[in-house]
Image (tube, rainbow, N blue to C red):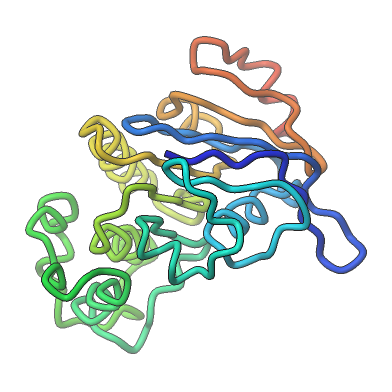
Length: 231
């Protein structure tokens, strides 16, 4: 589904990524791990088109998308749940979900029933403003908004950040359910090791803008990974 190959990324004279390659496969969860400031969010921003890469290539279902703007990547099936959620606080829950319509064809512009099966709390809050929701509810709304676009690749940046444990478990269950359907690839950045370990089919560990470990869940040596997560 996704192949990012030898990605370099700069912010001015500062290099954030050095030859980073990562892949995401249908029906699997790929986790990118690492400390703060090692380039995890920069990698996601490169994949969704929010940050231009300096070298390398990004392919989605075999087609190179490196030069495409974010809205075209979204229309091809990439949905992004950014760090900090970034829902619209003054719009209602229903209006927030409807903003996902921009990336899809007009006949598909409806909120799928599945959204409320995955996140039943949202059905009772459709008329409430997004800013009135708790942090955990806002995270569920942000994921639901992404799912409205019927993505082929769901990209999540630290979905557990600032979330209470009960909702973390709910989000974990939703991600696993979506992956198990087999029609979507999921790429997530995470610092919370236990969450990533339980979900990851594939993992990449970044340090100082480079990949230092990668493999399948079966290959993961917990002590080696944790060494690159602790300060």
